[in-house]
Length: 159
Image (cartoon, rainbow, N blue to C red; front, side, top):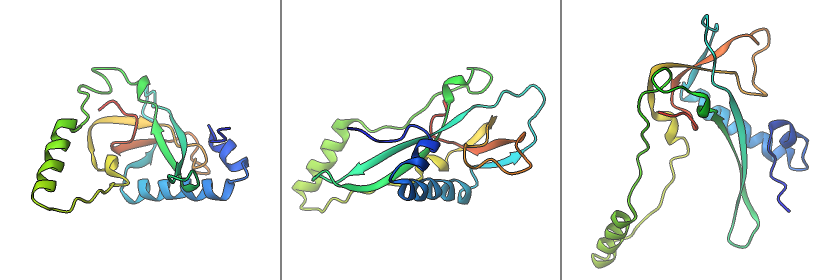
C-alpha cells in the first residue's frame, strides 16, 4: 500500500512526520539559500501562480527507504502564454548521446561517475515577472496577503 502523503498536512500527520518535516525543511533551505524569491506586496491585478508540496520516498533496490524527498512545485499550468511566459524549454539528452559516451568510456577504459545536482532547477534566472503564493506551512506571520516574486525558476513553471 502506498502511504506517500499528498499534502503537507497529511505528511505532518503521518507516522513518518519527522522524516517528512526534515525533507520539507531541506527543500526550503535550498530554495531560500539560492535566493529563489522575495516576499513582496501583491501588485494590483496580479493573479499569483499557486504551489504545492510533492512527496516521494526514494527506495533502495531491496525496497527499504533510502530517503524522504519533498519538492515545492509551482502550478505552472495556470500560466498564460504571452503573459506569464513566452518560451518553453527543457534541456534533455538523447539516449543515443548517452550510449555513445558510455561506449567511448568503455573502449578507452575510463571510469564513469553519476551525479545529481539536487537543486539544478533553482539556477535558472527569470526574465519575466512571476508571482507565486507563499508555500503552505511557510506563510509569514503578519504577511499573509503578500506573495513570492520569483527571481529564479522553480519546478513546474513553463519557462
